[in-house]
Image: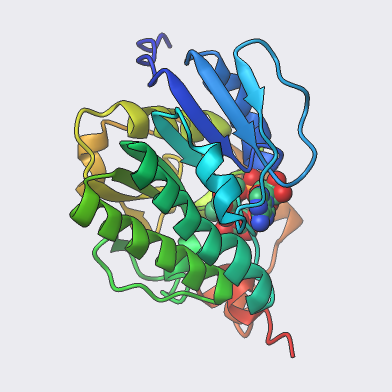
Length: 272
Ligand code: NAI
Ligand code: 15L
């Protein structure tokens, strides 16, 4: 099926977390659509291609983050700890880090940010509930709490300074769903790209929270309140169902990971 070409992105974009799983997927796709893509991470990055700048940076280093945002028009913020970890690691990368990013955005006049939030902001809802972005947060650990902090911080920076943000509560973005839970939470890489592009090009986004999932048959998240983004996921986990269910034939109903939307995150830790 033919799809309309995606719209042009802002000219100069910063991509944080560019060395990570999703960063490596989005890097060439964003580079192809903007004038300059500045890529950053604390981990080693591939050398700059044409139309790119590589700027290593630790998100907790406030001065370095201030310099990182200079000249940027928009940010795709993927950088940070992406799994449940002891609090101190999350505090630095995800809480101090996202504060540093928004302060730098304010000082440099950046107008729009895509923030990679997570479904773990609401991980303690049950798998037999369907929720939307207006449901009170129920984080399932330090990691989910840090993403809720990022969502609240970005709301403040919109209300006070007018910096627009799309907080994408990404489900599970991998090449394919790995288990039964991911039949509901899977977000294909193409649908992720479509979501980032819609978030950076929709005329008005204000402060929007959207769940990042493909057009899966089984789903726990309703995105009606984010329809103004104009994002329509086009993939589905359904073609993977038979293989996933064959690999994982039994559901353990005594395991909290089978009961709650956050899966195994709800029983990770304590760490001390
Ligand atoms: P990832 O762990 O592969 O990538 C994160 C990147 O951030 C890494 O390259 C890491 O070096 C960098 N980073 C970590 N701490 C840093 C620091 N202090 N300063 C600078 N950079 C730092 O994670 P992935 O899967 O690529 O996810 C990207 C973003 O999307 C993350 O924010 C994650 O929380 C979020 N997300 C991803 C989901 C997924 O299914 N892949 C689901 C929900 C949210
Ligand atoms: C996340 O937030 C993680 O970053 C990712 O690695 C997956 O675990 C995903 O959630 C998930 O819930 O499947």
